[in-house]
Length: 463
Ligand SMILES: *Cc1c(COP(=O)(O)O)cnc(C)c1O
Image (tube, rainbow, N blue to C red; front, side, top):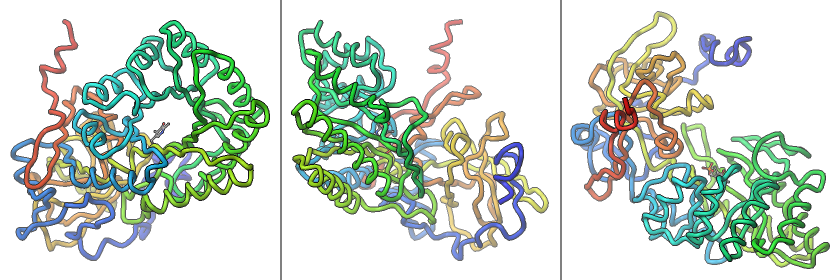
């Protein structure tokens, strides 16, 4: 299509040939259950509600823009992952997708473990009462201070990401007089994003230690020699927004190959294998994610089959879904400010947020959908682009969508599936105040992360 053919890149050639767009949906008022949180529906007046509270009431009480998270849906998804994998596996929620103390409590209550990758995430997890032994510490450049704090607080595992880190973690653990449980993150030469994956011998990216050229095997040798480290398993994370399990199949095959080499060389069978996260969700009606029980069945079968072939005891599996748990559970509510029809192109609809609360469209060309939430409409559909209020033409929230042509300033728009990597990647660009996160459940709404104030901003500006 013309977008990708433009010499200046896809963002510059966004005038598409006539007829490129899929036809507008037959019913603009319909809410596709695929992309909305479980309790979202329209009430008798046509207003969108979540957890039994309508968005007009929510906007009045909490302002816009704001993220609204369906607590019942979050808990249900967390539980579905937990149940699907059963007692012989562990589910670590990837905190980077969205982390707050309320979320940590929900996870704890639903029996999930937690991945953190910074001192800030670790502090949040511990403060909210997540037992340290259920926390895994990740990252490709953990500081000495972070490693020390992680070991002192007793985290269940540190995932080693480089040769330097092996020595660093071993040294700190020994000087604290303990032995730290660790996994080694390996890169297996599988790159998976959305509907495709590529299996290669090498991987050109910053995470992990390559399996290629015996590097991972060398890392294992070094870890096994160090008193401060207890090697409990191998970790692999192959990508994000993945829709089928074939990439995991190749990854599992290669990781089990390493486990076999370790057994043959050192006479030890490592008890755990972590297959990472990256499972996809529906951002638009075109996406078709698998259910947790299907994924659990497929991954468990793949690992058992590979281990059987290698005559290894099947290790305990862990997985690390972030997006797949929190992504679908929240939407962002905006108010329409200005509407600018551009002849023969499209109508630009400006909302009161933008790339400061959702950077994914600008950063990854991510696709989102949008609905008029404060009312229904029988007006004809018009092609719109939802943009923010920032000083940047790439400040796009939803690249292409259809909304009713009687859209007016003051209408409320809801963008679904913004639970993951939106608030957690939010910025203060243009001194925007980061929006609140409000949990809604059983007719009750409560702020779990409050809106920033100008006072918050100025607190850092020491003048
Ligand atoms: C980002 C990340 C995850 C979570 O990815 P999702 O796409 O949110 O499921 C899990 N594990 C590791 C190591 C990660 O870096």
